[in-house]
Length: 101
Image (cartoon, rainbow, N blue to C red; front, side, top):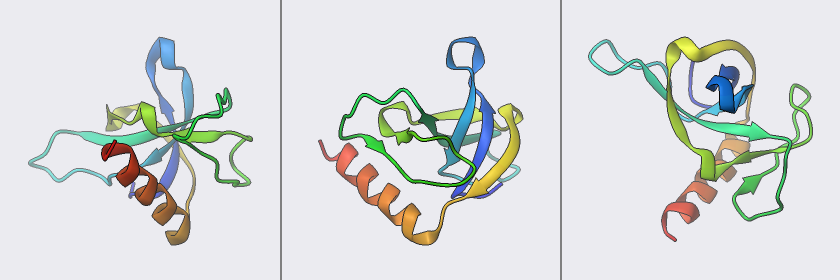
């Protein structure tokens, strides 16, 4: 489990099971067993915080920056694939914009 991977994650009853981009890797032994994720959604609203990245393992949709959250590692179900370094740079750049609002 490393940053840049996309996993199926159980986000609970209201959030369903959905693909999520890992922004952090597996925590060290002295850290909480949490990873920070960005959920992928197919219910697009067309706002500036949706980042569409086409991947064969994802349905048409986008990673939604307004839903960044940390979840327990036990909620990660299975690895779907990973983003490239260039795709991760796009995500990082947009996160920088998001937090400079």
